Image (cartoon, rainbow, N blue to C red; front, side, top):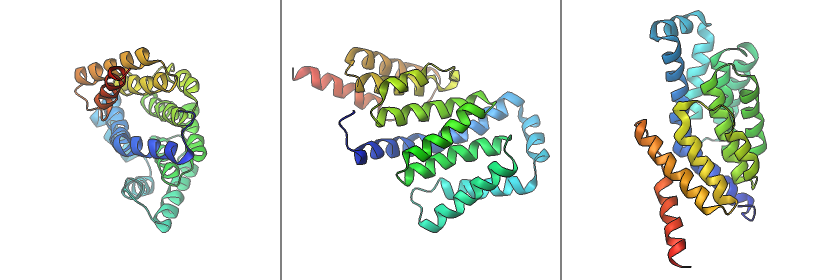
Length: 218
């Protein structure tokens, strides 16, 4: 993995984000609703500033698009800044930072993405949201040629509902280190966990198939 070009590294992160990013951010809202209870979650939303709710919906509509032009990106970044400055301790701010990391990846700025994710990982009081940040930081470390750093991040107390994604990225880190059997075991575990939790994991079976194809040629 360390021999990959910077362009290849960015493509890996962008592809992963496209496959997983929007659904996992949506999952953060659903997880919050599950923890607090639906009525409590509605009361929480009502207790927040109406302006924050409006701004966040605007951010979602812009940031989750497949491709953004410069004006859309600038508008999204302004909304992130407003939400994090004015509502810094709320779930709105945490999710805005996750979306800001997505915007940074789309602009080929992995360091900017890491900065936004580290703010969530270090500052959020919400375990599911923290877990998303740890997973995405680990993904970036793998793509950047730092699989050992990724494995350290994956040892954080990641939410059980994200265990399949955790195992998937763990497999990628082991593969980057040339640890084929550890990678195989992690990816098989990822598929098993995804099935148990009725989740869909993209690309994991292809990675397992690639391992088998490589062995057959040796």
